[in-house]
Length: 270
Image (cartoon, rainbow, N blue to C red; front, side):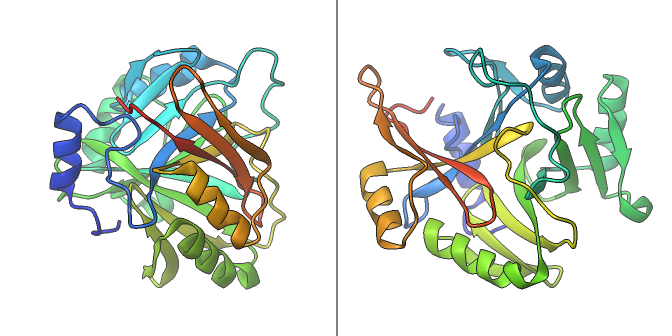
């Protein structure tokens, strides 16, 4: 995970009550990880899993939300939205990831609470997977150095091999991320998330309409940010819309490979 933002800064933000989706301060481009938005068929079942994993359930408005250090997980789309067309596997975002201090201890605790846990690849003890009733696949990795029990860690895109260098460059440019490698694989570090890229020969479809409908970044100035997008040739799928009561604003884009991305400017993050 990126060392650009210290764990101490994260803890300080949380202690100050600013741990909405901005537990990690924005980078120089004004970007930090914001949220996952699930098109959940069973909100209560999914919420139970996420809370058992260490999240905090809140409901400040329309949505049921489970909050973790670094990400807020929205558990449904608004009434009338169609049911999810499939899980994360098979979409361009194959899975998302958390880091915990100790994987075996976390897995034992979660299993006792009824969380559906699958073993790590090749019987790795420092890795596990949780698959929610909706088909959201969550990789669990170990970071013994972290101070908190669980934190948001990564979003993993599965792409054709030829597209991976382009995807790394795109996320670094558009969101001000730091390109690098992890286990000899390309990544981009953005506050609160590491964007990872893996090779797949299977066709991948857009996230929109699936259980992980989209993920979101918080930006400090959405008007300036979307002007930068336009200059880079990125078209908005949904234009900037501002909430007159709160002053918050949002917009949507697709990345070139089908990941649906929300952009949020929040005036008063919790």
